[in-house]
Image (cartoon, rainbow, N blue to C red):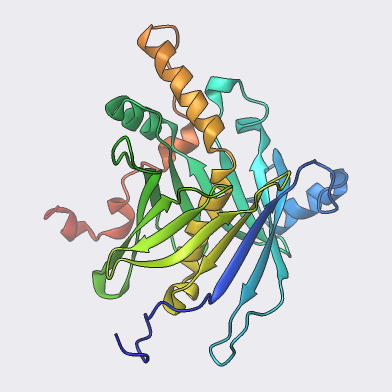
Amino acid sequence: MSDKDPRKVGPVYRVFAQDLYFTSFHHEEIGFRQAEMWRSKSRQFSRDADIVGKIMERRRPVDKKRLTKPERVGFIILRQSLWKKADQLDKRLVVKLFSNRGGWIATMEEMVAEEYAMSFAAGLPLVAFTVLSKENEIVTWVKQIRRGGLSTESYAFYILGPDKTFEVFRIEGIRATPGDDFRVIRLNGRKVVANIDSRFGDLGGDFIVRVKDPVLAENEWFCRVLQCFSVMVNYRERIRKKIRKGLNQWKKSKIEPSQHRYEISLLANPRKLTLKLDELEDV
């Protein structure tokens, strides 16, 4: 690979820090009028929204050798009615990213039925979620994959490229680190194109995404997926505990889980929206 290759993995080109608050006292959300203001900015800011963190960003311009200073670019909300206020087995994690001005950026939604299906087949609790971002109308699935008893955590996702191409990525846990750290591997070339690090000892949760591929650093879709993943990391043990308990009780016929209507809506037939009528005959 030559030095002029635009896909050469080199230094860090872009950094996102998802800083989750330890308490609910922060300046973005104090009082009813403030919440109403955010709702007026975007319908994605639901009435049960709880601002749980902020987003910081740093960039490395092509002609520079250093990253810019950290700049606050947005905030993170959690839908309380689906998580904090729901019974343990009914919890469903939904978080959203917004810009500083209140514009919606991305949504991460836990896919509970998929988790139960995968976990039942694998014999251990596995996590699954989808990501929606403002850059396109495509639903991106991120699923935890079982790779064997001695393997670290492993997740898979893909994003579309030009001319009907697509790129595949694996997010895998890194052993022997004090926090929750992951590397992101691109299938084509098997290069580590990004890292996700947790700041060990941070009371709320500080998860940093460092993108090393110059092309992917400019791909907002790819960056949104990793940002959402880093937020999910803070909740995944609680998700696994919920799935494990739910599976055990379901097997004993003590519960019968139901699927939230918004989760079902993500399973709607997309061909009705993306294909022409004459193309449907060939499907």
